[in-house]
Amino acid sequence: MLSGWRNWAKRLAYSGEAMVFCVPTGSWRITVTLRGLITTKLMADTGGQKKKIDILLATYQRLALLKITVKAIKLRTKYPHRIIVVDNNSTDGTKEWLRKQHDRGIIDEVIFSDRNLGLGGAFQEGLRKVESEYFICTVDDVIPPKMNPCWLEQELIIAKENPEYGGIAMKGARVSKLKNLGEDLKN
View 1: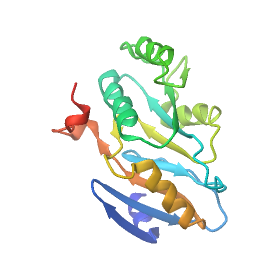
View 2: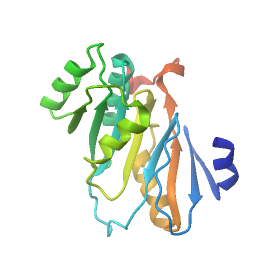
View 3: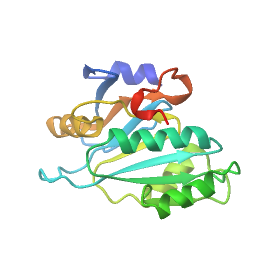
View 4: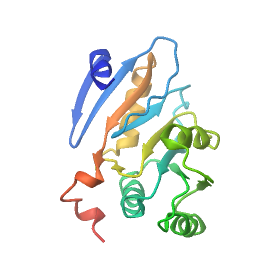
């Protein structure tokens, strides 16, 4: 499926740690979630206002990775955003940690599933809480790149410049494959 996406890619742009590509879809509005990619659904223009963008994150049994990912989102996302996390019934301490982060205001919404819904089911549950016109779907082991302007703002710029595209994906770094997380993510 990824090779199909690459064949459809109309625009490739390289920016530091990330590769951004846009997919033409005509009048369709789509969200595509591929493991290792941070994906955005595009809808109407925000009218130039900096409205919060929802970042929907699915997790299951990977508390250590989730902690790094949430920290990376908070440190590397300068654009206004809300974090929504769907926990797929983890038993490794994730639920307790998520409750604390929610109470501290670090995570805006938490959904606790009573069973493992899988990635698609978790996103389906989380999408019910999404309020923003643009939003991100990602998983607990993908961190956004450190960029200036920030990665989210760059995706929005591309989206607004290309309203005919139904989705934009930015390849993020997989936490599990990183040897050097960068100074900003070290304890």
